[in-house]
Each structure stands twice: as C-alpha cells, then as structure tokens.
Length: 269
Image (tube, rainbow, N blue to C red; front, side, top):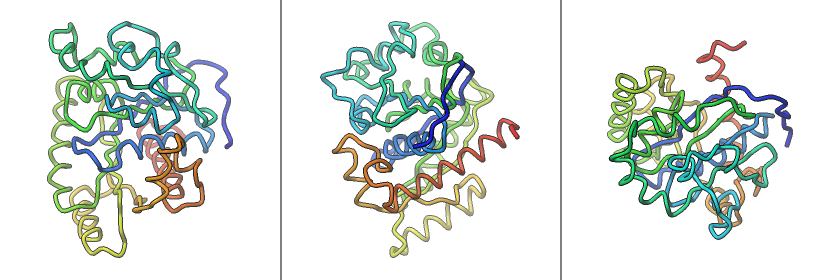
C-alpha cells in the first residue's frame, strides 16, 4: 500500500461512523474505510468507542494485550499518541476499546463538561490526515461525545425496510448536536450497505433514501459479500484479506468519494 509519510503534526479531519442500530455494517465500514484511505496515501487514526471492541479485534488487537484504551483517553487524560497502536496496515493506528468503556456512560453522567470530554482530549495537532471514530450502536453519551468532537458523520445504512425511519431519527440528532454543541458538525454522507442487487427491497430502499437525501447519499454501495464477514476473524480488514473481492473494491471507491467530499467541505484544492 502506498502511504504518505507524516513529517509534521497538523490538525486532522475528524469523522464519526455512526448508526444507532446494530448490525448495519458500521464497524466494517470504519475499519475498511480507514484502510482504504491509507491505501490512497493518507495516514489514519481509528478510535474504537464501541465497548464491544469489534474494530479493535478486526484490526488484530488482542484484548489481552490492551493496556491503555479509549477509556484512558476519556477519563485519564492520556495523550492519544501514547495509546495508539500500530496495525498491520501501513499508516493506520488504532486506539482500542476495552471492557472499561462499558461503564463509561455512568461515569460521564456526573462528569464536568461531559459532552466535551472527547473533544477536549482528542482535538489537537497529530501526524494523521484523518481520525475516524467507530461509535457504539446507540445514541448514547459516548456517541454524543463523538458528534461533538468530529467535523462530520458518515452513516452506514443497511438496505432493509425500516432503514429510512432510523436515518431520519439520526439526522435529527445530528442537527440538535449542531445547534447546541458543535456548530461545525455536518452529515458527510450516507453509505448503503449489505446491498443485494438481486433483491427488489435493496433497490426500493436505495430509491427511497436517494429521493429523501439526494446527493448526501454516496454513489458507491457496499454489496453483501462473504469476504467482508470473514476478514475480522483473521484480524484483518477485508481490503487486506482479499483486496479483489467486491466488498473491498467498493470501500476503495467509497474512500475516493469521502476524500472528494472532504475537499469540498474544507475548500481544499
């Protein structure tokens, strides 16, 4: 994989991968989008905020080997660079999850500036182009912290019957966060996942989502793909496990769209 070496610290772009519903390809998107961005020459830090820790294990981090985690970033004021672990992907580091995050919701309730904990700890100059946050599958205080900390949100959306209803709820939450906590927050885009072109429902959901959200929906769709499901059991992103599979190719295309949208959002040439 080609990679641009980071020679100095600068402010990265911060993206949250979020959906309050589980099983929609959220962590798969976080891991493979991060990997695909690295394949284009970007440097990426992935922060695993999900107590389940699937992004961490999907990148080959063994739970028994975790000494510092996203919990320490939130509550121990440990600098990100002291927690980040190098993955098997050149240019990609991860701040892993741990079981301590399971109790973070309770600890955050009475914490000063509870909505800004992650922003205060994370937003600083670092040797990365992107910092990607894999959020829990809920609209929790951890997810709220992510939304307050990031520049924009990427929403993976499974092609199922109730998809649009859940997306509407999530976009309302993003708007409330923008109004009260983070005026710069935007919806970067919606990516359709688990797309089966043989299934009429997938086409119907795609048509509905594109009708309601227009160009906020990425052109790239992520197909149902066995390799995407197999890869985490080997501690590898699908792009490394089998870069020629349809799922891996789709995430590489998605990364190109994300980069293009980021240039538009930031006004970069």
